[in-house]
Image (tube, rainbow, N blue to C red; front, side):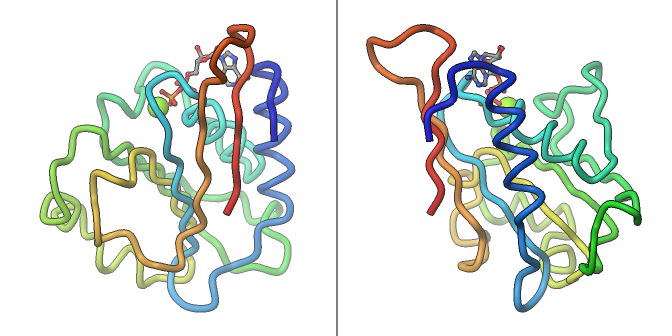
Length: 151
Ligand SMILES: Nc1ncnc2c1ncn2[C@@H]1O[C@H](COP(=O)(O)OP(=O)(O)O)[C@@H](O)[C@H]1O
Ligand SMILES: [Mg+2]
């Protein structure tokens, strides 16, 4: 998809959140990859808002590797998601680093809904069933355009 603005990225995130199905085992994980400034955090914040979670701008996850929030029970439909976890793995160096964040227990728990920015930093620690979304700047286009691809 092509997003022409911050507002469009926010709308794409809300729409994605409303259609997301729980993983068949363990936590539901959404991996957000793409270079700096491509829109990962913008997407994550609107996704979180769809679950009644409003992340403040002061504690940007660039400085806090992991943030956990209680999901608004009225926003989860028939799923049993309870905790939204937003990880920015930019400053992690290996799968061993993410294990220090109780990663194994976190990904095993079906009540967890996890967003991971910079998933490539944690290598094989990212479960194979993670949903992958890739953000890119579009060469030669206006500054406000981003490509968002789902696979
Ligand atoms: N279509 C767009 N979608 C998302 N962000 C955009 C878009 N156009 C411009 N921007 C700007 O790009 C920046 C994206 O920042 P951010 O979401 O923090 O990126 P990342 O987490 O990938 O580093 C913001 O400053 C935002 O205003
Ligand atoms: Mg970011």
